[in-house]
Image (cartoon, rainbow, N blue to C red):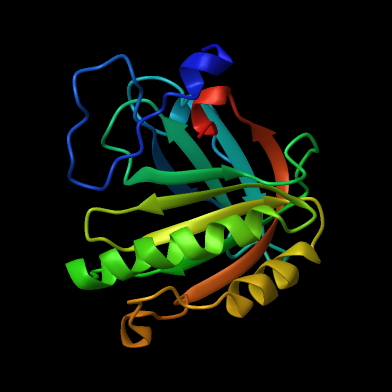
Length: 197
């Protein structure tokens, strides 16, 4: 897919149907594994993903493959994607934040507003390669930020916590992540379709 086509990716909210256009929706799935990561061809019936990232934890407990798909049925819809200042550099680590569902429609709306406040600040953090927001059907979501050093996630957290609430944001609807992990990037194969925005 050429860069111009990749830039027209539709970002969907879980449950929405893509409009009949030439634009492409992007879906994602997480696949835990132990020892050896599964081959891309074995992640889901119907062929390999359009891209994937192999993530390793120090103790092996949270080893994951993040896979991107051009068809639904993958578990998550990519609802946001932003390039960081280090987009041209290879990632060495990833910060993954889980916000478990089910979440109410009010919480999901508050999450979206908070994301519009935090994302521009995170994009400016040195060492951020790319960040995705992945939404599940139950409105739970996770964010995955690829970075160039294990020190960058702390800088991301500092910047995110220092942003001022936007008018109308209700702090009661904002919650921190249910889980967080900083994982090593073992392999990263991402075509334009998994990243442009």
